[in-house]
Image 1 (cartoon, protein in one colour):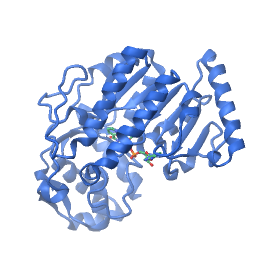
Image 2 (tube, helix red, strand yellow; image 1 turned 120 degrees about the vertical axis):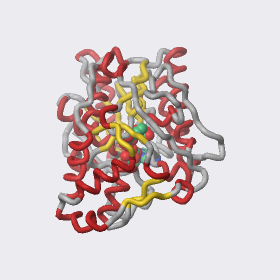
Image 3 (cartoon, helix red, strand yellow; image 1 turned 180 degrees about the vertical axis):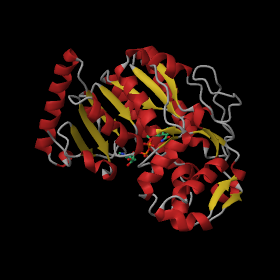
Image 4 (cartoon, protein in one colour; image 1 turned 30 degrees about the horizontal axis):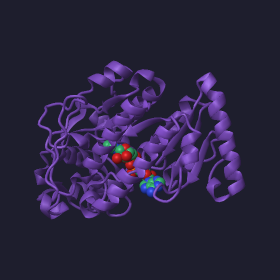
Length: 365
Ligand code: NAD
């Protein structure tokens, strides 16, 4: 019905809101939905939007972001309404009020920024998102909020459990924890609103979701993107792959289609209400060094990267030299997914090799 640039035109904007309010009221009866995705132009938001439009052809998606580069292929879908708004400046109250469900996905999720510009992380990830949470409480809009595996921090548990594991962070001078603490505080606020004001929420905790459109690899990233896309960028540009602290850190990588499957089950399943749910794939447990080795081996099979992949090396780098002194690492991060299996009947399906192959096909073919 509507698409890009609505916010720029007041009349069209008002008409769009009128349409959304009506849709919300009508659709509550028939269990159809207005879904508001804030940060829809990002990695998770773009895949979520795409899959919702495929599976629920009668649902309306309102997509908010400062960029639509990753969702340009969805803009002509009549059920997809993109609004270029900045959550640091623009009010989202009308959209939150008019929606049945809100996904606040806009955040900075890149470790190099946690240490380089921690206050920017606090202002966006905490302050701007807190406003959204309060509006969801005010308008009784269901909120499905991205927490993170980072909230468990340096917990020593072999598997992190949502309702039992401690959240362990380091000293204040290790500024990298500002992301973990911002997310943890919002988890606590949302949980408290659930008890006091009956806020209908689900907190989901992604464990290293990976897939196409994760980050841009065309420019040399030099530490500004997430690990898989950082390595892809190194391979593409013929730079050695730097593994921080020897690369012994263990992570569990989750392919995006599995993650999105879980999110759609969360929307569809009332039993996920007032729960915290890890979404990760313990079968894809892999050290960062192994990840680099696997990716380099695979890159030799692509015309675009064969030449570089045969020449570049994996080199070790101290975390102080790579991220600076305010970094601190998490050695092992493995999710318990018993809750996701039990509540959502969700099981991750895509293995590590298949995930990397799909990602490289996307970036290198
Ligand atoms: P992303 O960086 O790919 O997407 C974030 C989106 O937010 C971007 O499109 C960006 O343009 C938008 N945005 C940034 N500032 C904005 C602003 N001021 N106004 C409006 N939009 C703005 O991140 P992602 O990987 O899609 O992650 C989404 C959420 O999930 C984040 O909250 C992140 O912390 C959380 N999360 C992701 C992972 C993962 O594995 N990807 C893991 C744990 C938690």
